[in-house]
Length: 348
Figure 1 (spheres, helix red, strand yellow):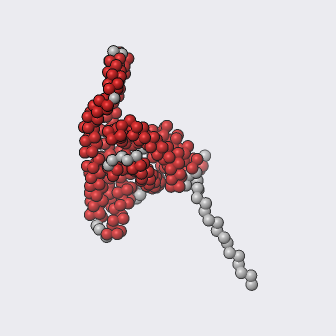
Figure 2 (tube, one colour):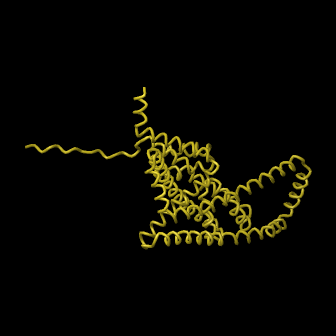
Figure 3 (spheres, one colour):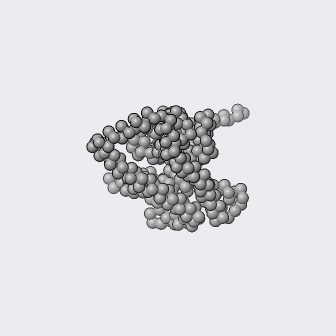
């Protein structure tokens, strides 16, 4: 019995799967920091790819390449939001005037609204529901501010990581020479494997956002919406947020549509957003994710649905790389390896 346990412990696969179980336990215990960790990994992966590209093409020192990449990224964000926020504030400030014009054009609308408001204010159920909606809105607003704080913190962590990457590599390499190297080495291999798969999925998500933005800008141009460049930038950045990004982007789109074209244009915008979202969810997302991870389209589609139910909005990003990661860990070969043709010895 002791010999069997000894052989089992000396098997390299044993420490490999023990490392996997330990990583799962650590992630589960630290699930409160999951959003921060995932955003940090995304920024590290994209930042590292850009830094390596600049170092290769411009032959800059790692310090200057890192500073250049993050300054460019910050400049793009500031310029984008500088273009987006002022028009939205202007359109929102014009909204009362637009409503006043609408009421003057349709006098019967004012009478109907007055009756509706009077009935609502006299209904106790509506008042209690209104209070519940207000408190719920305050909670969601605090969550939004917490999300912005998480993104900024992850961006800062990624900057420090990429700036001190070589120092961190020496630090991590020291663990491979320690007494428990047999456990730390497979843990490092598993982490690198997941980061590589996750990074591939993030690159695919950027492609999806680009295609969605092009389709949205084309649709807005057909509907004769103003400020196409500003709306396109807004749609692209909000498209990086799974599911919630679509809902957030609809708010300024509907406001601008109502101000510039009334109720008819609002309906047209809603139909456009729904059609593009359906195209992404049921065709583009499963197909591109399947190509990126070598999973069948059906498996990818089911994974997206199940992971969204289990993990919420993050499941649309994490679900597919998790499945691809575990298939790789269990050595499930999805790519067809080319057959090796053995040459027959020449006959004498």
